[in-house]
Image 1: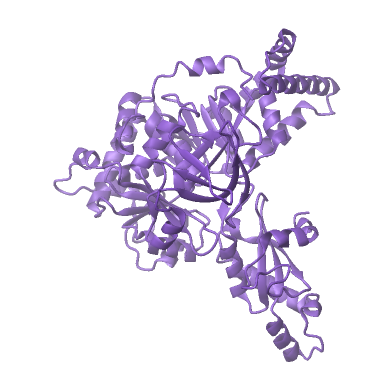
Image 2 (image 1 turned 180 degrees about the horizontal axis):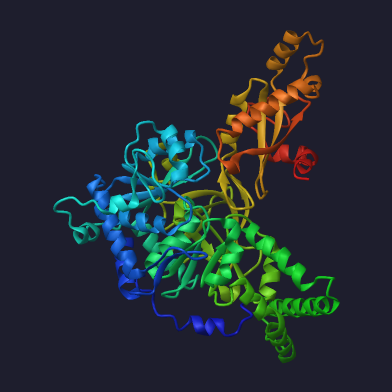
Length: 605
């Protein structure tokens, strides 16, 4: 499907190369972008407050780098960042990069146990955070003494201003950043696997620079554009689409601290590139459709329905490769002038060169709606292990139901079982301190085994049909390991014998729970109950209360998005090699989803 705004592609073709696109490292890219940007805005907060020019950004990066060096941060060290979306994140992350250090982010919803694991794996020399997270961090890592706060004060912690006042004798900032090499680590992205603890994906400067140079051929990138930072900073999507995009292109980054304020912030920003998870597009779709077809205004409803019908016909013709009838073009132009263009302006997407959707599947009806109103959404596929994007739907030939074609230079092939394999310069170096799982993901020939089952058509368009790995990706695009959640549930009470969590493409996590037969027998004996079967005790109010308390206890050890919102206690026992379990007691997830579809749907009512 091609774009319906006829002037956009011609405007895009006149873009000059972004200032930092050909740099060897992110540090060099930043320096080139800062020099080109001068006094134009670089970092700002939505709704007012902090705003820094590129010149000020560069000056602050140098002073923060000097302070970090004075605290002992050296090339190869890691710096932990835990903060909401705010300009200070970009300042500190970029400063750490200029020392050859590796900044990485922690999800703000992480529990202390999770923070402790990440710190044990990454071993940060300094933690930069907000006052609201200090107690949780200290509970995770007692005795941590190098904490810097970007807001407020706390005992034993430095403020960012105090950090910037530090300097060590002999420190040479320019020599430091010029010594950073493409093979140096730029970040760690902690991503949930199918089992076990999070994996630290090691991404280099060279990975990210190549990724942007390749992606821009399918994802237009103008110099000095505008982007929004609103997704979690621990997720590669926001780092790529806002932080690294800004470093290589000189784009102004507007930080939205509260993602619920995103829609309000878009008209203020008017982003030139914008990526959203399916849940955002689906909510916008519902809201805009209601506005265009509200029965409260019959005339507007009639005009809206007619305009959408014209937009749909325009898209169908373009998707089929047909020339557009002059009458249809005139009708669409009229609908655009009267309804669609004002709607795009109200949304703040009237100057967008590219908008995308990724991280989870999106409905065809949502894609068709936005294409009809002149906002063609490019569905993409990617993963942290390939520095973000692997396939992108080209704007000149977007095909609904696919995630597009490989970015130039990235090789794709299918394994015998249909698993998508990729190879290219954007593939991670490996998982931090985890050679075993690195070897599982990267074979001897350099192919990354993605865990996704796919199809590739004759034109190179990729369709993702299933996930080989048991990863939950909720409707907001957050990746979670079901095994981690299930282990927390089972460890919270001996009553819980089996747990199966559901949440893929869903708004929240629910669980099917099965009682442990031995624990049931003990419970019944202690209370003098005649029937200690799972069928009987699943209906017992005291048992249900005990299980509910156990779920809450498990939730306290999980991040907010991982927490189980609703559960059902099944009056049955799952036996090895039965419908639900393999002979070795592994969950048959697909079979469970099919067998208990009614119970699962009831949990989402």
